[in-house]
View (tube, protein in one colour):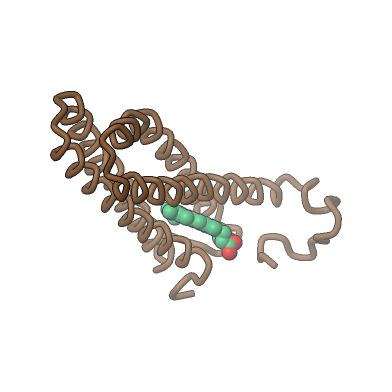
Length: 173
Ligand code: HEM
């Protein structure tokens, strides 16, 4: 198992969870992985839903979906600070020999930064443009903006999938 828990008996909480020095990184990893699950899961669900909505090409369905994005978009990005915060803390913790000079850690930060920037800069603007077009009943423009947003979501999915690969295979280690 992990180097930060030498001699840990994984069948019992004694000696593992009872030891604060060992259980803190474990809890950080737990929060980190849950945040990743929420983010990746949310992106998968949204990219599937937007594909269905765009395929149906029903303006009511498109407008309803765009309306929901105002709430869902920020919710989707909410776990991101927790994800990066716990990840950076795990590296700073140093118990597992990780440091910021390692390729996999740098890749993680780069992939996370790119996915987060797409969400904040590109996706949120596309949602605002979609909502404006829908409010003006400009169906063609709303559909065009939603198609752009869908591509942004797919790109985010590729980036977070690459980050998950990086976490598991840790290139350079
Ligand atoms: C989209 C971005 C990310 C995803 C989906 C993700 C996902 C994961 C997953 C699934 C694990 C468990 C891997 C395993 O135990 O085999 C993990 C572990 C870890 N992640 Fe991330 N992560 C992301 C970003 C980051 C970032 C930005 C950092 C900070 C540099 C980071 C640092 C770590 C560390 C240090 C571990 C613990 C490795 C260990 O000792 O087992 N992660 N991550």
